[in-house]
Length: 409
Image (tube, rainbow, N blue to C red):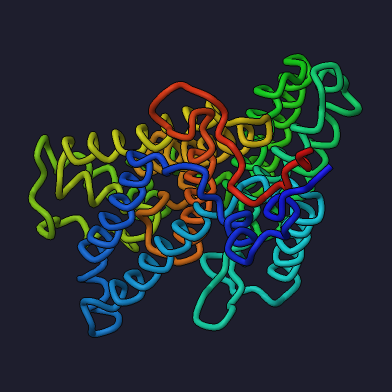
């Protein structure tokens, strides 16, 4: 028996790099284009929404723009890098639990006196020039952990309360409790909805999910009713006209922005409501889009988000394994929930909550985490069963050099 010299050789440095950097196929070009467009458009709208406030507060109309542009470039670079790292690397127990441990440590640090307080909440940690919001990391980390946990379970295990439901719920409750301690009610709700959505997709019993939703709704209602500032917000939202000069001032002005934009808007940079809408460049940037670009601008923005979510779900269906399916579907759900809640809040369909609009709102923490999430989603699209997001075909093979071929006789 003879063995070919090339068949037993160790993988070269380049081959080992290819094993880490997924080059199985091209990323979904439509998804990638949407991400780049949203980041670029977000930078433009942050400048348009913040120029007057920046001039008044900082004597520099480009104050917020100068901070958002670097985050935009770093975010796109991160998305590109992460899109080339094989998503199956996150399926290792050490990696998954390591990410969770870091996130939990950051959340604990934020509420233990090391966080920065703003607007009555302690949600940020100052790490150099960057203010990290651990709750943003918690949303992505729970998706990765849920994908890891659910992919290990079979159909029968998912029907079990002890194995298919309870472990996921406990992990979500831990992260939710830490978010509520900040307090960050909006992020806690997103974490719960993410968990239930992925468990439903994985085949958990609907009765367990509905029962937990009912209990969670009751607990959420109690948390709102018996915390004075939350209950006052609800009352102000229900009676917005009566509170338009106090607690409902910001959402009322945002609603005015949408109404004054009409069909085509007043023109980019020509909005007037930014004179009255506080911090319009953060959670209410969509209101500026509505005023300056009108209904058409909001419709195109929603179309971009719908395209991103649809392409993400498509990547989930075409993923070669359960882990990739849950991971892509979870990230797509994360984007969808944040967009729906933020837009509903800006249009006064929901009470005001501090949830950023993905890729659009001012702030480095949210932008970078969403860019990393988009990079993971793009990498899953690389591994579509045909090696291309657009066609049907065979399962994408592993990169060359990963396995040693059998000896030939």
